[in-house]
Image 1 (spheres, rainbow, N blue to C red):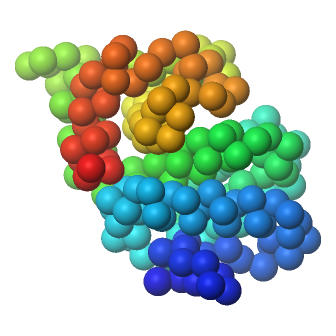
Image 2 (image 1 turned 180 degrees about the vertical axis):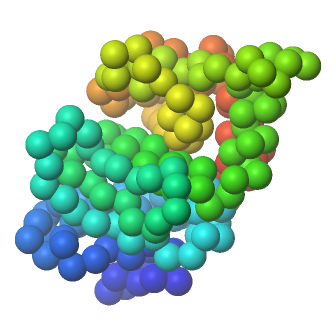
Length: 192
């Protein structure tokens, strides 16, 4: 367990980069604490991979955060996220940690691709289905983005019964419009 003062942050460690932005650090900590308390199954799946370092970074890139879907245990959240409200910070946090989970639990990710994204009985036609990532990246999407978005959409549904963030994912509901994604999120990603 990682603690920051009296705050239980499970396996998430905020490094020294946050010292320059204490207000943003407090916002991230509050959202991490909520994630730890509200979705312990998701957190346990991520924490099975060990400590995840949460870093602050100033960036001119059009991203709010970055957590690689490959070896590495560092997730970076950029200054442009600071101006957004708690719903967007939480959404981005869950999304980026979804990329960490993608790497930590490759069998889980592979099960997602084969049971959610592939057409029944056809393992060669496995296409991403959630629209939000493609909206921001010139129509491009990927299976790893679909996985991370599934986690983020699910938490928004649980927390708000809707999707109040700035992503164009708000046009759909995970439970109604993507039932396979929803079922996989409940049963496998979040264990709820």
